[in-house]
Image (tube, rainbow, N blue to C red):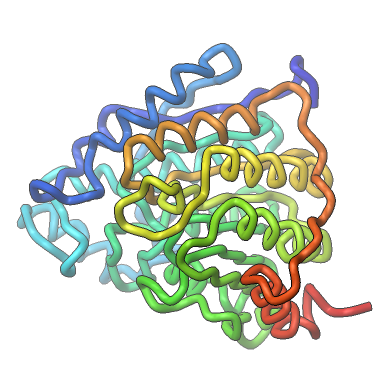
Length: 351
């Protein structure tokens, strides 16, 4: 789509900073100040959307009623911890609903073709939240709720979710692991929190083969991330043929991040976003929506957001680069071989 077509949108709001944890907690309101600084540099290309709270019915497509009640009660009893890492403050219930509703509305407008792409700069993050459990800083699973919304309300059947947060999105995987119409793919540091995301986790039942885990060892950087995406995600996406691509957009694989041990640079995030945009253009009319997940170094959040927004909002997309050569006995070679073998009867089947 050219410059005269639908634009790229962002959602940001000061209310997302009202979810507040104990002093020193890494998932802090200041994260969004860094994201805002990056967004401001692209204002001429962007459209702003006003966030709204998700309804109970929207969230209950993914979460159990008991979980909804738990988060609401936690906010009434705040400040409180729901597990060693996850907290609720007095405004957390409404802010979590706002994050979910923002993710839904962005995904729906992209699915309709009203927008080319977009970024929901929300918090708290969501991809660790299970149907009945808050964990890993997450209260409601924003991307999962958005995916179910477009399936239910926009006539979208096949959704691809790519999770490039440094941690595996256990909640998102478990939501869709029996659903053949949702391809969940993840690059993540492994073994690491939350302990899920092994190569052999490929989905279950009707969804077998529609979960694509790409576990990477500590120290992996641009070469490993981009190589794995080009060799594994791109062919899987082409076989799956999504109607919409959602990205769990964490920036904690950045080399500066204090909670992980990866070495992704700004160029790496730009490269990932460029590939995802080109895939969306090739497969689903450019429909690409990103939702903020982790990222705990302010420098990494600023640089990552800046480079991702540049890639998804530029008037003319860059093509998908060719698959790079793989060095024998390298970490990338090991990962590509293992994942390809695990999926040889599915999306990555040999022809």
